[in-house]
Image (cartoon, rainbow, N blue to C red):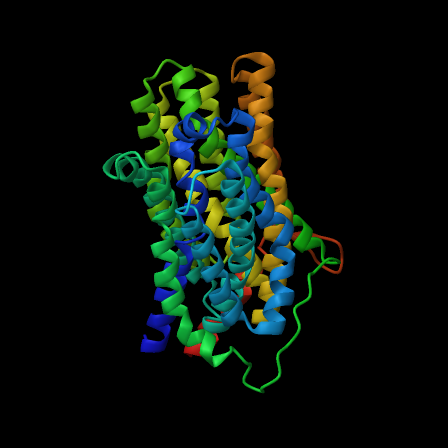
Length: 407
């Protein structure tokens, strides 16, 4: 592999590590934040909900800003914005400062996410499975922030500022990595930048957006509520925290392997449905009151595969980096807005009933709907109207093109 490609992979990895610590560093410290700042539970939940909503609301702007400034410059500026908002939390402790940094930092994440997909299409046009570096690195960043924020808080003498702001270091390192790309400006080979367009009239784009929404709704619901569920089921808080860590760590190797497996098979259907069935089994085990360990393992396997594939499929549909940016902006924008409702719905159902059975039933139904959608979006109609079983998500086309280029 060329040194340029190796450097690009490192840049993708370090940038992706910055897309979650703004939220996941807050989650394990929510109790301390509420105590020190007198925040209500509803207000405290905004610190994790707001960035996800921003990721949905502002993602469609990513393609437009990328057209104007260039993909690389926009990613670089977004990383600086994320680092600045994370670091700003070190200047003081107040409710409004935390909410402000959650909003502006969420905007930075919303711009960087889709454009990283466009950058992958630009640098590795026939290798959409490179998205595995993106998704696995994002998971690593989330795991580091969620697992180390409490120890950093304790080692700093119980200073929330230090525990929340220290993750700005990741953003500074990423900005340094991306400064070289930013200086070049990211112009196309012809010197003329193509324009990104959201595929608003494309049925497959809407299917992928709904899939991203169901996938992210499940992911954020499990992330937010798996620990409270464990405590409700009789486990200790330490055991509950271990379940959450395990759920996150299992996703890393799966995120690295699922896209490559799809690229090898040339058809995403089997892998998509298999991952969804893992989630279905995990929720089913929780509903039946079975031990949580196998349920958490199944949920981690499912989530770890679905997330990178939800990022990969829009890239595979696109022919150019600009198209990849438009497809990713649409699927992530609409998908995150749908996904942000997941944890809120689970919380509302729990508050209304006092238990998680109703919430788990809704999650089960959501997974069944996702499986039906996966089946639908990975088949096509031929001119005679007969259905074909092979995928039309673009993965097979990319694989065939890559084989021809080798020959």
